[in-house]
Image (tube, rainbow, N blue to C red; front, side, top):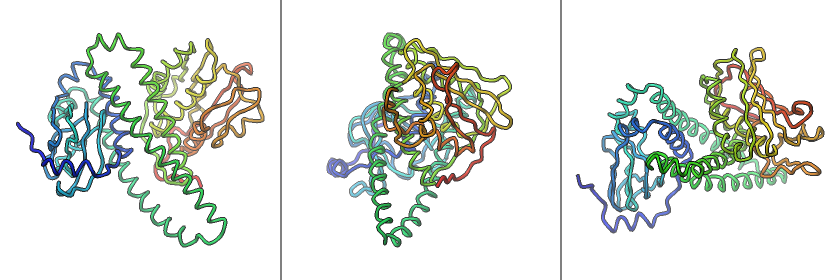
Length: 424
């Protein structure tokens, strides 16, 4: 069926309007969704995915149309708009690796906005019918996808609440900017807003890069993937690292402002630790560093924010890999401690001087002197401290085994509380 399209004049007008980049919640959902799909078997993907192509100016779907298909951008770029096409309100754009219309898989509702091809595009498609068939044939994979879509709804609601609180706080702050101290505080806020703006500008290209790599894993012939496995692994590992850095920077700011929610769910602890280790195994292998895990058989399930917990452990593991020399060893030990779980990441690196251990978790702190300088912004460990404390836990660092290297340890309750977290 030939697609309906907008007029050339309307397309020129649409391309002249500044288009906001994708919202972070859409990018995070797309990355998680693509990670699940890329790990599915080729047979499952062949049954689930379809393909469609559109020319520049084609209307992929219109506001008010029935929603029964989700799209993943394979190539090209589209605009998400509301209202009349001659004078549209542009909500954003979607590029390679990003998801469009994902709520159509859950809701039997009409489209809330229109999507128009800004250039020639290829799309991977998933219909509600094939998605429901997936749920019946592969409940574990289907439940994982449903959990991601549900998290998007919670994130949108949290964002709405945060926006309302921020607006109320802004009114009070503006009326109180009378003293020099308050003026300095306002300058600090502007500085932080500038950092946030820079980070948000980074998130979109990083997410697009991640999506592009995942689509290659899904569509390239298996023999081509095998021949280029090392290149794909390098791209995936570095995308994960970039996302870890950007998310840590944003969450440190959010949590210190009190605008932060934990998304508590039950987590299979053994599977969780294995996945965290798998994410850094390639980087460790490149440095000839061995990774060992020891998860107590007495531990099965923990209630925590899985994404935040992955990033806590991911930051500690990346830190250990960074400062452990080639041929060294990193151990991940997880043990019960009363009503808490204790995680320890032990490396054989240079260690941390005793007088620096109390400050190593502060923002922007780096080590100098005769020890290797800890490069970057010094935010990874600051994020770990704030996220652990948000779960009601504690984190600290000791010397490693036989005073060799470092041992980063954190404890969190077996069951953390959900809801707003304020750390001010």
